Image (tube, rainbow, N blue to C red; front, side, top):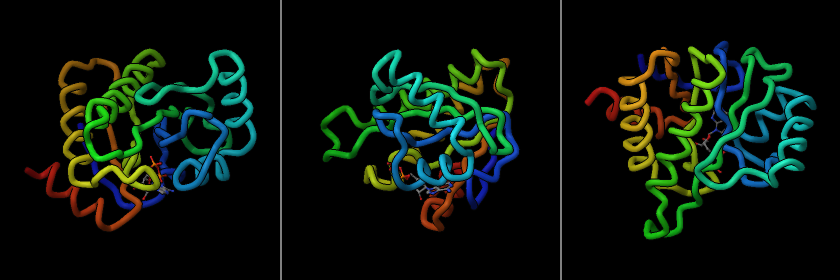
Length: 170
Ligand code: ADP
């Protein structure tokens, strides 16, 4: 099942929320900053441990930590691509970020998961194209999934919310 909400992903009462992280896993601006602020130090501690073990997280991949003080039990940190004109494999890397987040959710028995609009902030991925990729990738995954039951797209900005209404509706 797919749902759409307007709001702040840090408030979501789900098994896992997804963070649009950067490869360093050391936190940043946008949704990443909001998640670390609301979730507290436990999240950054686990990110640092992962970084020490494997040297960060490559674009298109995902790692999992505690949700710390968040209502969500886990945070799945994925790294979306920076938009660089469209000829740098951006579209398939964005699909991979969604897929690898959902695979990690499956491996951790996560039933409900909320995604932000990965790469559409500081990374400047075109919003319409990003929404089409996100919705198609999630729909395809859910059709074959017997672990993840519900995916909620949480749109922080009005523009993304309107785009998602159309993309999910049609
Ligand atoms: P990226 O670097 O992947 O572009 P950003 O954090 O800059 O990541 O933006 C990704 C999306 O997250 C943007 O659409 C932005 O509006 C949204 N966003 C920012 N803060 C929040 C929040 N608290 N909850 C949900 N989405 C958020």
